[in-house]
Image 1 (spheres, rainbow, N blue to C red):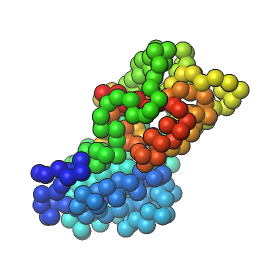
Image 2: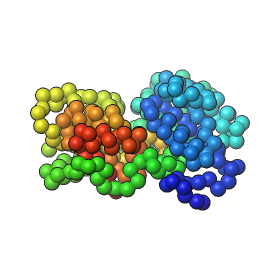
Image 3: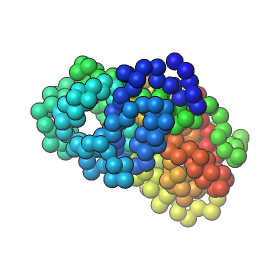
Image 4: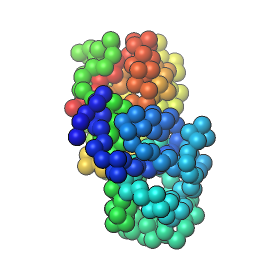
Length: 282
């Protein structure tokens, strides 16, 4: 299998079909375009009330309407699926499931401990139905920081290292319990992501630190220990950089290879302009 431009080139046209199930924000746009550039025949499914209409998906389904999508995948001979884009932390009680989804939810409910456990259970249900769940970052590694290290002109100072180490440790702790993935540390833990999601957690931190004159502390968004990286891996974008700057933090810590960076060039430029650092950890 040849590699072109950092992406795996498809060997057989008979196996180049993939369905991209798209949630909110801009990541589905970048993923769709990267996959098509690599030769994939991408069938885009927008999740109703989440996807951006500008995406112009081939099909729209509600979150509890998986049966219609499954039938369409089979009709088109699609066996590979990838999931990108935000949907927050939906509750099972918020769904209006069709018959296919009811069966899936029964299995998912048995394994539900948190959001990530739901994703793992969904993967298993789809695999039993004959589908292969593919990690988008494996097909399009350029959507992540592919190499560990500092990604910006600004580098962490020695005084930042205790905050970085504490943030990574706390992120792993809450991730291990399937609570969240994001934390803010400034000598002490001042923000932890829970069901409200990363953006709302950062808004709280921005409000809390509105009067600060000097920047200190870090924001970390790390992969959960043991996380199934095929659904809902961490992501940052320009809005993340802006929130970190508004919160008077000095930098961002993520994983290399397993954190989506939405519009990577713009993210790095925004961080450079604001003189904050981004570091990708192995």
